[in-house]
Image 1 (spheres, helix red, strand yellow):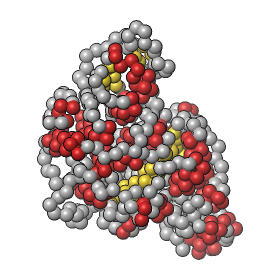
Image 2 (spheres, rainbow, N blue to C red):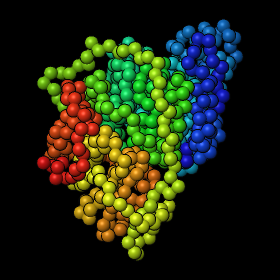
Image 3 (cartoon, helix red, strand yellow):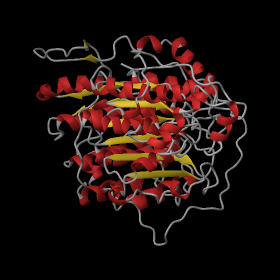
Image 4 (tube, rainbow, N blue to C red):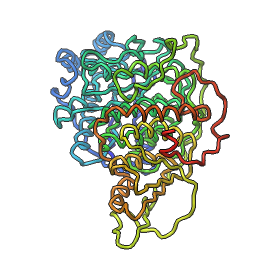
Length: 559
């Protein structure tokens, strides 16, 4: 199901201490040693053509790069000086064409159904490269080219680009900032414009231009040391609600793992296992059409671990237990609040975002602390179950393909969400309430009950089932009544890891639904820190001190 492609890249320059060929070799070796490479479909790489590259870059720039294989060392050094933090040598043009071509081969394979999703391991990276300039180790903008290619060749209407690299992908932003068919999301170390690339337009209030206003989302990290909770909070309260409203036909990930712990560039503290969960949460979008393309990542240990976590999730294995979910820090919440406020006029799912009496600004008095060398445990071994899905069915109901009949069960404490009448309101509750609660609670089993009067269409039910499988290492028990026989097949499909169909572009949720859900969230956020969306909440009550054995039902949601 997964396309993995590694190839030899350019020789490292003495001026470049971190962008080294070993980034690819250790990642590929980790996939081989873990047995993941054997489970992947390897697709031959091709060079990107001139026509491909010109989808994003200018002809003048392409012609200039074409000349680099014939330059002397002195000419190459002089050529490099006109750009920022990028290094050229005679082989870089060939390698850059291979990197872009690998991304396009992956898009071809996903869009034609040869694979469900995939990851391309490439060098050089691409997201900093601009129309007429190399930048930040990047020569051609691999993901931007892939987005334009998918739109041109396959008629893709809407593309979501998720950039979790620790540097702002200014090249991607510039490529699509006036294009409403591409939603670009980036979180990045910013530190009030003190961190590279030190651009004013990397801040939260750069939301796009002209017709593309609202389709550029920047989350600036103004402190180092961000952890798993910070990343997950941004997904639940910002990216996922907007992504579901946008309804992409294809998801592209600028998969930079310099946002993982131990990286000398990022200086963040998110452990590699969080990328399993971030990947899982994106996999029910776009009918599962997801292409991840490697960007940064300069700690060879956390890079290899993060690549494996991402690929194993793309292969459909249950995600590991989420680690260190202690709630987002104040700096992350301040950034979240500012981004939601900046975008609330463009996205109906954010119109409820809190409006403070005084305009909230980022606290520039918070200085990023220097992060000492980090030591973290190796991610726990993830189990690939021999039987992924077992079903208990009444007589006369055919067992779905891929499932195995099972004849016993046991009483277990449930975590249940019941119905909401409006699809948009229901998804608002799932993304902004249920998922943060569930991740912080960290159950060992998810019990999902479908009642005969649930009022959920099959697609919404499949989305819910798919999203909740990121919890409890995939241990999920679904109970349905006899009258719900027609839902057995769709439910089994979700349990087997098939992506849910698209919900379509979601309209604004009903105001009364939003008011009820937000009222409940406000009541609970004192004890459940992942429910917080602003940095003005200072309670110290631990979620572990709360007994979460009750059901979140429609009655509670609408009190």
